[in-house]
Each structure stands twice: as C-alpha cells, then as structure tokens.
Image (cartoon, rainbow, N blue to C red; front, side, top):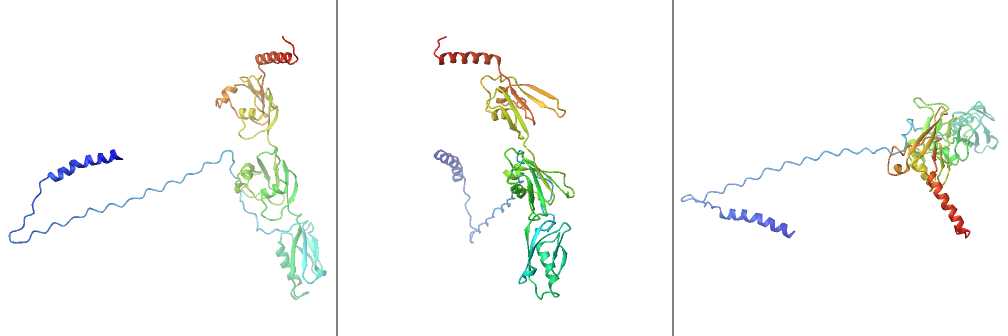
Length: 354
C-alpha cells in the first residue's frame, strides 16, 4: 500500500507543477466600470444511464444419472377422490332412531343392495354420500318425516389391485380411494424384496388413451429419490409386477464366487469388487466373460486385463448383461509357486526341516 501511494504521488507531482508554472491571465477591468462577470460554469453532461446486463439464462439441470424419465401418463385419479362402491363391497347403513332399518349389507354381483321399505337399490359406482342421498330421498315423505342416514364402507372388496413378483407379500389388495398410488399398493404388499429389480410394471385392466402398455416405473426414482412423477395412480383390476433383479455370476479365482444382482452400471471391475476381489492365484490378464445370446448360444469375450481395467481403460471395463459369467482363471505359474510355498509352510508347521 505504501509503494502504491508513493507511485500515485509521483505521478501527480509533475502535473501539479505544470499547473503552477502555467502563465496566469490577469482579469482586466473595463475602464471606469466594474470587472466583467465571470463566465458561468458549464456543468458536465449527465452520465448516460447504465444499461442493466441481460439476465443470465437459467441453467437447465442435467438429468440425474441412472434414473429413467417418468412415464408419460396423467397422475390424476380417473374420477373424484371419493371411493366408488363396487360389487362385493360391504357397507353399513345407519338410519338414526330407526334400529330396524339400520344394517350392514354386501353389494351384489349386479351392483345392488336390498333394504326394507325400499327394496332393491343400485349402488355400484356411487360414493357413500350419494348412497346416503338416495336412501334419504326414498324414505322421506312416504315413510319418515326427516330421515337422517349415514353410510360407511365396512369392507373394501370390490375394487382391488394385484401386486406380484419380488414383493414381501404378493396378493390382491383393496383400493380404498380412487386416488390409490403405486407407492400405496407396494406398501400394502409390505414393500419390495432385497432381490427386486429397480423397475415395476403396471398392467392396466382398462388402459387410458395414449398410455403405453405396460407402464414402466423406475423404482429407484420413486423409492430412493422420492420423485412424485413416478408415483402413478393404480385402478381397479390393475396388476403391478416387480421382477426379480437380473443376475450375473462370478467364478474362478475370486474370494466370493456366486450370483449377484445386475444393476444398470455393473461392469467387470464392479463385479469383481462385489466378489471380494481376485485371489493371489488369479491370472489377472486373462479374465473372460461368457455371455448367453438370445438364441441360447454361448459367446466368450476374452482378453480382459485387470491392470488395464484398474487403470481406467473403458474398453476393458465393459458393462455386464443378464446371465453373464465372469471367469477369472488361475495362473499356472502362480499356482505352482504358491503350491510349493504352501507345501513348505506345511512342513514347517509340523516341525520337519526340508
């Protein structure tokens, strides 16, 4: 700061000196008259107003990796939120102060109920409030002066959705509202199992116009990210299917041979990591994949070098497909060397000097 101030002063000194040394023109008064008035100062022109910078273009967030776009369907229930009665539902009808008219009845297959005084009434497709109005209108005037009727749903049996596949409790579950969502249906089935795939399929009993069949829902986006766009509304007669996760296998010189669930981004390196890594006898430059083609034919993909994979060679760290078998063969030289070493260890362990 001190050097900067000195530099400024040095720059100003010659300028000030020049101003002091410049000849000053004396002001001459007119003879016998007052001195001429000083010329008025001219104000500097007003500074041009600053033009605001254009607003920055908002950044469009990149789509999250590994999350499928939401299904192109309406998220609204097909009708209002109140439950519509259907065949096999059981309802309780209470006519206040009229115990002989209060009862619990089940909706018949034809969608009707039978009541004293009123006979057979069609109730399928009506809400509980609409049934109340219908019974009240039937009783009023001819039988009761001012009937007060309450209708409640005792059992939801008429409108159900089937949840199958890799869920804790597969079965059919009642839809208690017209806005029952996929998340509620999966909750009724006690959630998905550990080995479930990350997608679910919704097969409509009555497909909506423009909807693909079946609907594919990304469970990662729904259950983990909580994206409500994937929480589709399920309807009466729909089937929800959660498949088992696709599987791949790791064999040979690895710590944990076996089957593992295939995820979208599973590669050779991730598969070997899942299997606990390779053993000390592994031939890390001769890893191969045995792939089953759609025709059932087996195809061998060899020449995979683990060192190149770990160095970031994407051409070596190839993605796996369902039913792939990753084979890590043993190295002949390593097997022989470690065989001798194990033999010597055995001799020393029992006290024999070779």
